[in-house]
Every structure is written in C-alpha cells, then in structure tokens.
Length: 326
Ligand code: PBG
Image (tube, rainbow, N blue to C red; front, side, top):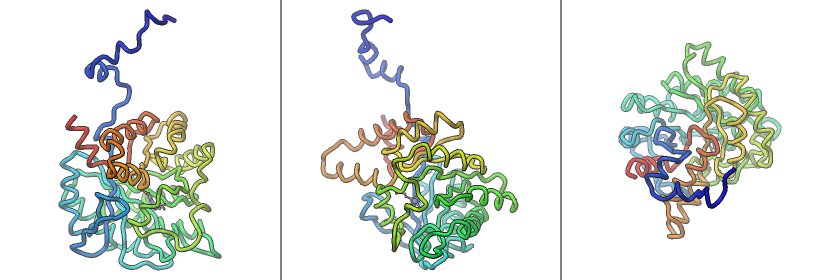
C-alpha cells in the first residue's frame, strides 16, 4: 500500500470534470417516481398545508398535471386516492369508478408513456383509517386480503401499469398475484412495500390523504423500526410470493436496511422518501436554514448509494429539473 506523499487522494478532486469522471453514484431522472394525491370530485385543486408545494387534485385536472411530469421525463407516478365516502370496509377503494380507477384511465389516455403505479391499501378509504378490516379491535389479516385483491384487480382493469400493495398484511402479494393471473393480467408487475416501518415520518401524508387511524396505531402490521433482520424476512417472503420489485420505506432513516436488502437480493429495489422527509427539508429551506437544491440532491444520492434503484420522492419534479439543468 502506497501512502502519502506518493498517494494524494485530493488529486482526483481538483476540478469538477475530474470529480465527474470518478463519481461513483449518479442519480438520474430515470430513477424517480412522483407521488400524486387524487381527490374525488371535479375542478378541485387544493394545496396540502403539511407539504408545501404539493396539491391534491381531482381526476379531471390530472391531464395538465401529468403532462408536466412527462415533459420532465420522469418515468412514473404513484397514485393515492382521497374518496368522497369512507366506510368500514373501504369499499370506495375497489369501486370500478372510484377515484383511483378514474385517475388511472385519465392518465393512460392522456400520457400513455407515463407509467402509472397504484398504491394498494385501504387506509384512505376506511372510516376508521386502518389498512384493513377491523375484527375485535385489530386489523384482520385474512379478511383484508380479499379486499386488497379486489382493489388491485380493479386498478388492473382500469389499466394500471404496476400495483404496489402498502398494507403490510401477510400473504397479500400471493393473493394479488393469483387474482391478477386468473383474470388475464399476468404482465402487471407487483411492487411490494416489503419492509414498511411504523414510522412517525408518515405524519404529513396522513394529513394529505386524510388517512390517520381513528384509534390506536399501525404497529400491529407495520414493522418495528429497530428491526433489520425482520426486514430481510419480509422481503424474502414477498419475493417468494411473487413480488417483481420490493421496497424499503421510509428511506433516509433506513439507509442501512436498503443496503442490506440490496446485498441480499437481486430484485429491483425501490426506496420511498416519505412525506416527513420532504416536509423537514421543505420547512428548513423555507426558513432559509439550508440550501434546498443541494440537500435534496445529496439525500437522493445517499439513497441511491445505499443501494436503491428506484426512488419515490415528492421532490421528483424539482430534482428532475435540477438534474437536467446542471
Ligand atoms: C398507505 C400509505 C401510507 C404511505 C404510503 N402509503 C401511509 C401510512 O402507512 O400511514 C406514507 C407515505 C408518506 O408518508 O409519504 N398505507
């Protein structure tokens, strides 16, 4: 091993061109997925107070929204729905003309080249705000599977490109895969929210999607933040059930988990930089406490460096703009 003064590591940092040449990790627009909140109704465009810069809009206003995203060459959007009616079993989630089903049809008609991913979950649609059916005060796993399956199938019928179950029920990937296959949707991939933690970083999202649980919390189905070995079991299980891609969520506080999953499995890996991550940076930037552009690009790079192939981020638009104007 040669050492100083023969070796001077600073030599390769002397200019931007040199740094570009030896750069190990690059975030590209191709890596990004932009989340969209779609609210049932028409001509609605509401700012989300907990997530400045983001809006909820009704399906009829989606064409202009997605054209801008497609123009930035962001490859995909992921959809979250806010229905008019909520009930015990979240029936608006699997209504053939529900808000997400309308949104999928609209986007696939106006910008067919943009991939549409649908979040498959019930929490935005249930009156109690939990991700499944409640029996004796807790979410009943097996009864919930039927409803998740119906939801995924209705998204596929509306023309979705990828379904992404985020409920954390056991067995949902297999149930959804079987239903898709039985109904002629063999080529619709499943992106499983495999290691999804019970995180306080989802706070702003729950306000945006009106999906906060009305009693208790999600710790009986989402993962306990201290556990990484269990995350590998979750990922292993979802892959065994037929997941085509897997996800770790949140991203920034779970970079070690992203790295372990990347080192253990070969499936495409997504990381979800969640609402709380966005809100923290946005709030500090608005105060003038940090340089938003540099912080966002640095954090996206960190998520990629940890091993993610795909990054779901509320900063996708700005990042796409920054990445192409550097
Ligand atoms: C639905 C879902 C949630 C998020 C994505 N899908 C909320 C939750 O589990 O409470 C969170 C996304 C974010 O915070 O940006 N289950």
